[in-house]
Amino acid sequence: MSERKFTGRHALMLFVGAFGVIIAVNLTLAYSAISTFPGLEVRNSYVASQEFDDRRAAQEALGWTVNVSYTGGLVIMAVTDSAGAPVRAARIEATVGRATERRDDVAPAFEFDGTAYVAPAELRPGKWDLRLKALAGNGTEFTQRLVFFVKG
Image 1 (cartoon, rainbow, N blue to C red):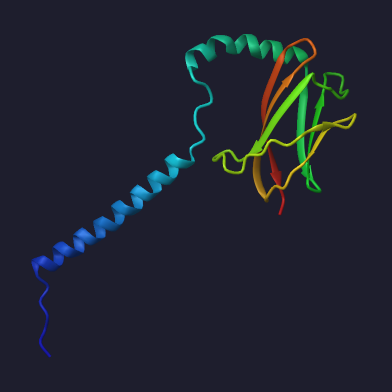
Image 2: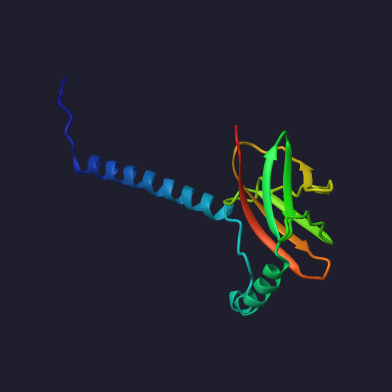
């Protein structure tokens, strides 16, 4: 049997093939990162920064505390005032989702049960965010992002 020689053509094909695989993987990962990015938090960060302190002071004056948990297929969101009494907001909107992608986002239909807001939701195990927007009776907007975990 004759011995095959490793020529310059073979070396070129090896290098082109190896770098081709590396470039293809990098392009695939870059596309995946860009296509799953949830987007910007605000359209104009300068304008948002000018209003931030006023909104924060008004929100802190409410004295609200929010705790969120997940049990038995229910998302439970307890909103309490500075005295620890349950708060019933004039309006409440919440989105439950993952921090890194919007594919799993859901907007549960929260109902106030007298002590907390409760909504059914099918959540897989892992880390979840609850993005809350509420309106107090006096017109103050309350926003908060809370992290909670669903055990498997």
